[in-house]
Length: 360
Image (cartoon, rainbow, N blue to C red; front, side, top):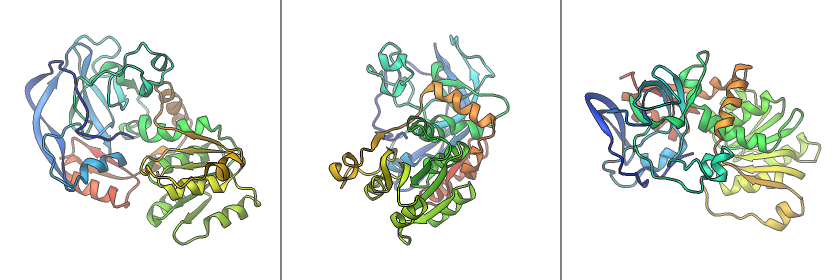
């Protein structure tokens, strides 16, 4: 869920670098990336060095990858990762050798405001500039220790890299919508977050209806248990939903595409007193008619994005109970194959793509 690469501000904390070198991925814009050799970071105070074992591509990286001009000195590529604490300085919450995932944020928290106390770190009232501009598409990353969340030995790094962004974004919305067994859930947009929403809803014994215009992703979500799939360009979606729901409409509708047409479709497809969530962040324009489409239907409509640190542990518990989130990963690439990985992902020919920084 993170973007604006290159537009972030950073504090003036002095970052140390060792004489050793590592490989890092840099975004060049114009659909290009570069595998650069950079200095390996050194820990300082509570900033720890994490050896990245798995890093995921997110749709919000499209901004930098497809920039219409060449980009220079753009670091910070990637924000979904898991790895091992490699070096520490004055850290108190983690130690070398710990397995962790990295909570994704574009700033550092004050830890004092009501939002921070409630675990809603992304709503911090007094955010501080990041002390390290590094992203996760790298071999070693400098991270504040509090952003390193523990992961169990029985889960893979690929699985854990998805917990706090892709899976977490879907999970938080589903939890807020109180999806339960027997609910009929419409999911528009079958990219990574929509696919994660389907897996979570199915694990909660809900019936899912998935809608997209990408046949490949519709096939993938069907293989992950979606009960019904429809192509919005080819099928009469609302008519089919009415037939499935005995003319009542969906109990829950979740838009993961960010497209205005899909958001409107969710409102139209939801039953009276239904629950709707908007997760997608692509479109800023809307043709929603507030009175007709959700006031008169008495809908509960929420916006939702990203999970909280406490939900990290809830998701781990669900995975350990058998929630099959590994089905989200359709492709794995070494970091040297990043151009192919990004092209395939942004062409819609993949769902979740994992990058191994050590496969060069």
